[in-house]
Length: 194
Image (cartoon, rainbow, N blue to C red; front, side, top):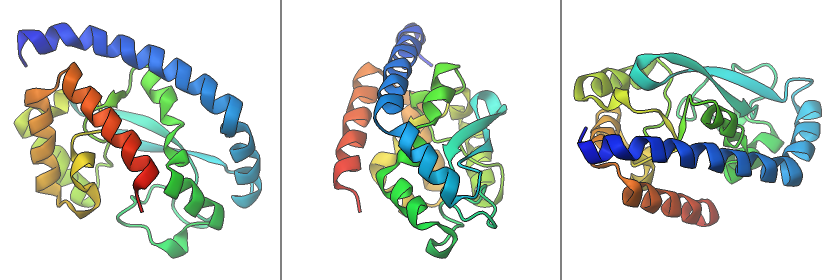
């Protein structure tokens, strides 16, 4: 990590705090309330779930999401492991719009995540290989992000080694300009994906 990157980290954290606060107020005002009510009925009383993920320096934390799986399905399955049949009809909407991810604003606010960084992974199956590679290349030292460098490169089609390679590229080059580019690209993808 360069001196410039170390100098940028407190500023990055300030952006995360202010951005997550604004995002939380916006989400609460416009859609969290009705999403919670609908999901409360759809999931039979379990509208949220907390998934154990691997964060900065390999420390586990609880990632908060809206539940999109059916009540009898393990919600900790990754998007790669789960199938369409496991999702509720409303859950498919939450996944398509990425509303299920917005509760991670809480994780960002308390410092477990950042807006931009390597995606938080489950220490299981292929994700465990990516985590191991992150430890080897040093990118495990970064907070996981709501979006990241790998997401700009068709994350669903990437294997575990390629994901770790993109995480390393981000680790070497992260900056305000790169974070801004990833953020704008993410917003663009939300409107034009699928």
